[in-house]
Image 1 (cartoon, rainbow, N blue to C red):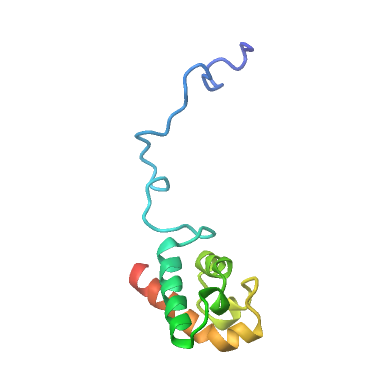
Image 2 (image 1 turned 45 degrees about the vertical axis):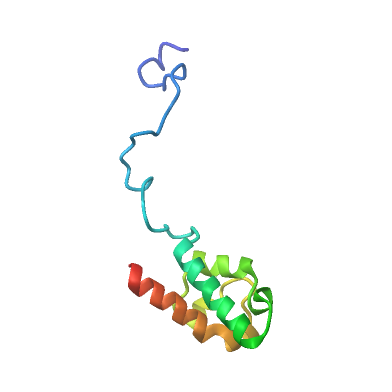
Length: 112
């Protein structure tokens, strides 16, 4: 190692560990923007299952899991925001939009 880097370059001979790190971002209960909100995803999956049972459809016919994951990542609160989610077009928004937004808004009110 160059003498100019001594004292400022990390010591690579010792393994780096995050154990005991107290950053609030490493030990959090809520999803950060851009991450899938697991609790919201579970609520959306429960909504989808109830719709599928009620209509006699498969759950993937109501809405594929990938779309629910995108919704859980974006957390839209308006129809305009929901329409920005990939695979949500006018048809899905018209058929399921209000119900999906209701699930998202109830989740956000309870958890944030």
